[in-house]
Structure formats: structure tokens, C-alpha cells
Image 1: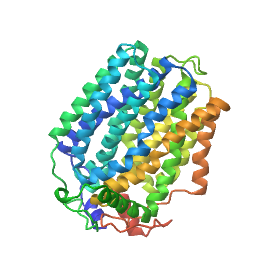
Image 2: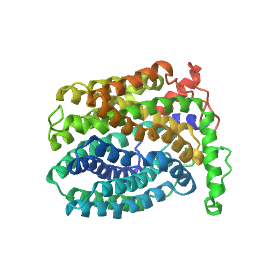
Image 3: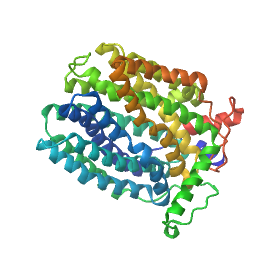
Image 4: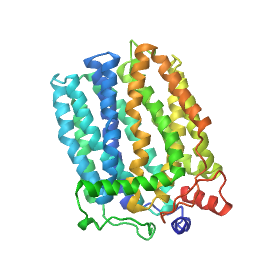
Length: 450
């Protein structure tokens, strides 16, 4: 609670500062590269084979690292400086993307080479993403986390989802690996920007006397037993936070549905699919996601102030299910609006949930607890690719979207995300997330999220 009070005392109109802007530059350059890469990869797969099985295998390779690498990434993000983890992981991706680029440019890229390199690049990217969420609370005060997250995510969407998919579509249409060379250059910019990022941590805004067993960074043992012990510590904390568990359930169901839809959407949208789009048109169609998210980023803070974070967390998840249902309509305008609405709702929901986690999980445990959360919510994505491929092969692609849209509605009815309690501050005290929090706690929770 003391951390949340300090966040409440932080003026909301203060500048986020140059360290945050430098961090934002590193993140958005990385995500712009990811936007090009993640759109180009499935389209490159379509160029090799148009079978649903080939697209499914590539989609699985892109998403499987979340299931395998997330928990180890959380331990590493807590043992070492998050910016260092981000920098080295970004550097590791460079030669792998360069190899994929060379093979694509010379028309020697086989399906299995694409699968292997996509999987390895995804593992490195997972370390970048986990460490990035651990780094942000070290750069801005608690009270500015919602504003910083909204600024960061809206910028990410503009570059990674608006510009990236369009560029990715053009790259695939040209049939060369030239666009992947742009990805390499952007990763170089990310490594350079992270090297300039100061190592200072905002201890005054993020003090927490959480009881942890970890030793100082320089004295930590690197044995497998110590790594497992540190991971277990984070998992136990996550287990005791029932508010986080219920939010993770809602996010996991929606991510499963999202993976089902996005894996099969190329076959539905790109000719001879039902929507009849070109590869470039498909990339432009996906920009509707970014347009919705960018518009939401400008009003997210006001929406949270007006409605409160609890209603947003409870209503947002089932609304995303309705967006998935709209994708089953064989009409480009309807699908475009569904993607737009998904971007709009998911931005507000994500800012509320991410800011809440960053404000209530102790920093010494944040990497591991956040990794456990993301392991559940993102670890289901590979299964979404498999389920989507199986449904498309047996029942038809339209059924993928219908079932994907129904799942979040069922989950919301059976296990709706509760209003999070503000009791879980940086003190490490777990929260039970009652249905109605006392007035003082509710006010502190809203302030920490605004």
C-alpha cells in the first residue's frame, strides 16, 4: 500500500523523462522489426506450400517459444539487469535473421529451414519481451505506469502493427529476403539504444521489502538447483495471488482464440481464400488492428478514470470474443471492423492489466512472477495454432472463428475476472481480489492504474 500511496503522490502530468523515451525507442524499433518479420514469415510459408499443415507448422514454430522459454526468461530477468538481457537477446537474433534473409533472397529457403530459424528467433525474442516489462517499472514512478504503458503500447502498435504488416506484405509480394535485411538493421538499432540506456533504478518509487531468498547479483549461484529454486519462489507467489490467476485465465482463453484466428486468417483472406485479397492487401487488412489500438492509446487513461479498472477487466475479455466471431463473416469490411474493434478493446484491457501487475508485484520477484503469468497466457498460443489447423482441415476455416469467438464468452460466464484488490502492493502481500474492495483500497487501485 505504501508503494501505491507514493504512486498517488506522483503528478500525472510530469514528463516521462529521457530514459523512458530511449527505452521506448529501443522497444519500438525491435517491435517494428517483429511486425515485418511476423507477417513475412507466414507469407513466405505460403510461397513454399499452401497446405494448411505447412501454415500450421510455421505458426507453431513462431509461437511455441512462449511455452518453452518464458519461465527461464523470467529467472534471467531477475538475476541480471533487464536492459542487459534485452540487449544480448536482441544481439543473438541478428545472425539468425541474417541466415533466413540470405536463404530467402536466393530462393533456397525450405519449409524446415523456415521452421527451425523461426523457432530460435522466437526464443530470443521471448527473453526480450519478458525483460522489457521488468525494465519499465525501473524507469518511471508507479503513478505514471498506466501513462507510460499507454504511450509505449500505442507507439508499438503504430510501428509494429500498422507499418510493419504493410511492409511485411510488400516484402512477401516481391518474393525476396530484402525486407528481412531491414529487420536485421532494426535489431542493430535496438542493441545500440539499449546500450545507451542508464542502469539507474527508481528505488524511491519502487521500494518493496518483499521477502526473497535471492542473493546479490554478483553472489548468485548459477547451478540448476539454484535456478529452479528461484523459479519456484516466483511460482509460489503467483499461486498465492488469486487476482492474478483469474486475470491470467481470461487472458489465456483470449490468446488461445487469437492464435486460432491469426494462424488461419491468411488462408481465409488471401486469394483464393474467401476474402480474395492479395498478399499486400492482407498486410493492409491487419493494420486495422493497429488503427484501433492507436486510437485507444489516446483515450485509455480517461477510460480507466471514468469506468475504473475493474469493469474494464471484467467486460473487456468477453468483448474480444465478439470480435473473433465477426471474422467468420466472408466480407472484407466486416472483418476489417472486427480487427479494428479488437485492437481498440485489447489496448485498454492490456494497459489496465499490465499496469496493475507492474504496480503490485515486488520488483525482486517481478521477472519470475510476470513470466509465470505470461507462461499461462502466452503458452496456450501454440495450442491455438494446432486447434485452428485441425478445425480448418476438418470442419472448415469459418468454424475456426466461430469457436474462437465462443470460448471467451464461455470463460467470462464461468470465471469472470474480479476487480483486483489494491492490497497486493510492492510489499509482497498477496491479494485475494474480493468482488468489492473497500473504498480506500479501490481508490488506491484506480490511482495506480491511471
